[in-house]
Length: 126
Figure 1 (tube, rainbow, N blue to C red):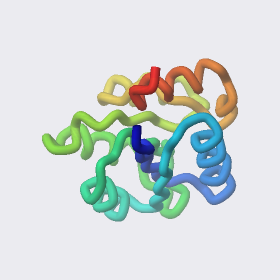
Figure 2: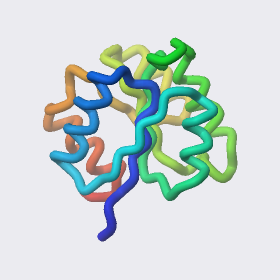
Figure 3: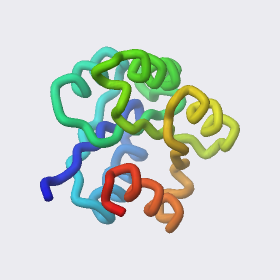
């Protein structure tokens, strides 16, 4: 099976490195990192994406990651791509789920067995 593609949006550099390491050490994935909403949407439209990870607040401009989630879910060509919010706060995770995301994870939970299993399921590797 070919590697899955994950687009990670709006993480700071240290978090990008940590999330990329987490994904690559647990799954056969290619990780594409983007910084801003427009670049992120263009990247997602240009490739076969299996999962989108969105930071709650984008590091580059502090815009709201939930706006990207809403844009993805309103676009009929992109709405079926699984999206997870990267946030340590369960209340924000619930807001994202209510907007169409799959329950995500926080940076503090990267090596948690629950996080690994949740991501495995979303990538269709269960």
